[in-house]
Image (cartoon, one colour):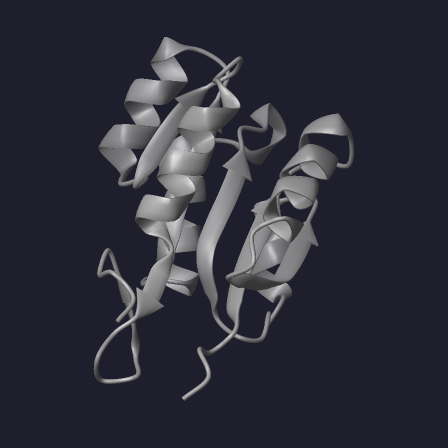
Length: 137
């Protein structure tokens, strides 16, 4: 049975970070769809197919409170892994408290990001369903 496509959503303003994340995602063979949005409001109106397994969120001071941002994402895509990219330790702590699955501070090493992505991406389980954190059989 073929593995279902894995979708990733990147929520970040256009620029080097978003382009770098997209480039990294396209090198990972298990990821077949990469969607992008400028902000959480735009992302909430999207209906990426398939449902995103992973959502990256770049902190954006114009979005308001981190708790509200993460809450809206978790409400829209409750089973998606959420990686929040924080500008400082205060944002890092707030994002963790709000329920982000992983939080990275700016300047993180690429190898750390890849390890987090691999950990959060769902794998093909014995039942044929994607299950986060289970090895592919």
